[in-house]
Image (cartoon, rainbow, N blue to C red; front, side, top):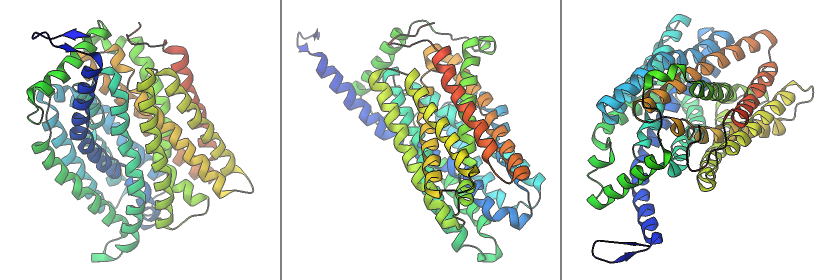
Length: 446
């Protein structure tokens, strides 16, 4: 119990209820819109996996050309994420998110006019360059609003939008490619890029009017609600103790490079699934774009549930290591089972699809929990640069994994060998957390 200036007793439960109520309001204001933007980003990033079903034949591209084009997106990420997050801290999230969203929408639409591998590579690189900064920018942005014990659930809710994009994107891509083929003399895959790029441009314009940079600037919160948020953040910063603020020390920090290695291993699995799920579904016997889209939608729906549930449970138990590692082990094990099924002489499509779904659920469920780790060690400008550095370097896995998978598919005609390799790498991510990250309680442990 505490006493106000007027001598009125305030019980802890009342304060907790008030803070919960304020954060419900904050979450309803921030997370749905950020989630919509992430859905649009994800659709514009991964629609190439569905366009591939028609695009390769139309343009006479090989599997290796597709794999390189899908992965080269992440080179753009690598070069531009850190500068983007530094700019966000300087000019605010509103201007940064508006710029990013409008630009990636325009580049998505320009992919309509690709005719050569070189054009394909350039536009995929530019798509990554312009989208760079959105994901780590939102991670940083949410730390301006949520204290540590509320972040994993917030991260999970936001990140589950990528799974929701899979739920919506599969059937939507299937419908566009099936029904729009031949309209105005264009292929269905060309209409896919146009119709999924336009909403991003419009959403970027809307972001300027809707977003608020920091709690103290929120006109949609009362003064007392602002104080609740700011006090929660102040308590959290005090409880976390002294963390690194100097971003220049990040490049020689063993902890930062450990986090990069962990996330790199996880993203090898995530990017493989992202860009090759349509091909996996096709390889087990479902060739129609609509069938591929709906099967992918079910798998991603399960992934969305996994992200939210695992993130919320991690917050509730205040536990990170096993919530991450358990999910990654499930993902890696299911990936290995999928490889066994695709390599079997007698293929069971249902078992293969269940393994694919379990791999997706495990891999995606580990992601929001991972992003609790950097903020245990970093604050201020170091957090801004550190989150972007971790994400940008680790996302080189998004360049390498799809390209290697394309080469393997080109050479052997199957994805089996590549899936075994990725399964081992994902299990390594779990082991690095269990061995390399010390058990974390309420306070950061060095």
